[in-house]
Length: 197
Image (cartoon, rainbow, N blue to C red; front, side):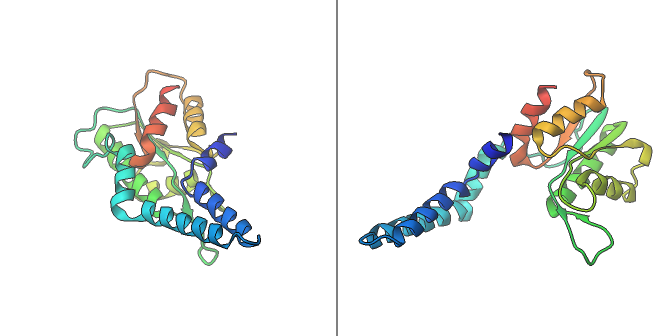
């Protein structure tokens, strides 16, 4: 149900539905004008939502409360949690790599980890690949100097709700201070899920 609801909230879904209606109308007699109208409407909506001023304005609604310029003023934390954002799979390479989004999140999480004096860096995410997002991030974090004993992984969570639930299972002490690292547009939903636990 969660996956279905997430899919239906995707802005492209109404456009795909309109394009499907356009295709159906194009096969009916005397529906050429309606088909053209629906196609132009779909294309217009898609174009309007994708131009920079509109897309930036829509993103800023989600991001404005969470954008931080630096981690200099980070408070003392016990755990820094970094949520996966995809991996790059390449069959010609020996190992999968973090996507640009995951790499950006991980680099920021490592900065927060060091600045906050946290005991653990928790890498979270199952992902789609030979290795989990969590394992890939943990491997990269070690290469960037985080000691293996300071890294925990959650290799089974597939979405934000599961990230929060699995993190709660990893730490029985509910008074710990965590720093949550993800993309700004994803933070509102992530914060809501993590606060439940």
